[in-house]
Length: 274
Image 1 (cartoon, rainbow, N blue to C red):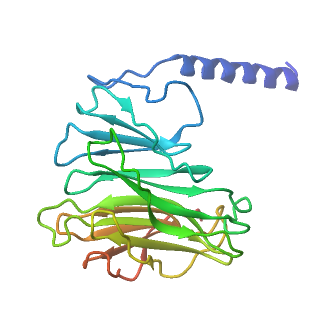
Image 2 (image 1 turned 30 degrees about the horizontal axis):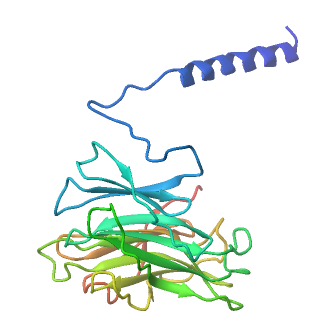
Image 3 (image 1 turned 180 degrees about the horizontal axis):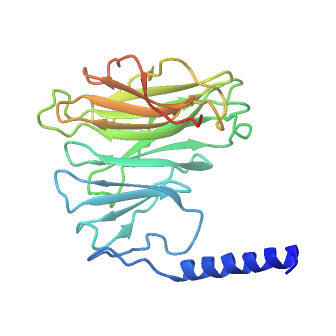
């Protein structure tokens, strides 16, 4: 058999194996159900979900593009879509996350902008943009008309681009800071990237000036060396924990005073290949 024939045979073998693998359906988990939250296929990505700790029957799911929300009043057995969640005064919204606060109010957090900057350098040529939250008092069925800005940038040269926010809530009755909300995100600037965080102590109505929590700024590009990928959690005692990716590491910091300030960020996992 010639070399080309051998390669053709190998190709057909792997093609057949791949076809058989994709044709097999993995067994569903016991009692699992799958729901379609969108009436038709589209560019729907980056979902998030939250369960109301005060009423576990209420569940909210969020996804993009633009900012969308769906809700379940019966612990996920049935779902409906919420209407008019995305802001109407921005062209694009997304990077959604969601949480419930200690009072059982649902929140959706998202970015909104008119135009991205340069590819992978989002602050280069950025136009007005910001991070916003919106609240629901009925488990995600309807949402307050006001889109509250956490951080907002107007269209002037050199503005940063606010990106990839993630919202968390302090819902613990043991915490001195129960009711606090926290949003962390990447702030792209022309020369670097920062991990910043803002907090609300009045049910999301107002937000503090964001503070930088990274040990040092990252690179300004979205493909390598940036400070990005904020994720957070709140412990029962109210301690706020935050992680993100930067350089070749997963970084970590925490706050024990309700987000007023944070410990010096340090690497906890090295992720680069040697």
